[in-house]
Image (cartoon, rainbow, N blue to C red; front, side, top):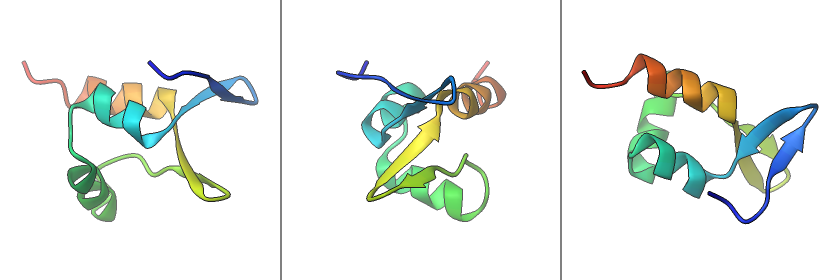
Length: 66
């Protein structure tokens, strides 16, 4: 995935490009879903948005197409 890992308190965090790759959505769709509380919201770290890997994994598990 990314070139480096972001780990805070033992939890791995992802930048937007990694999130988009994992969930297979476009940036505009992710932000639209966040607006309606249908997608995990990121942690704001300075100018960056960081998503918890565990939150993204949970989202993917709940929204997996069967």
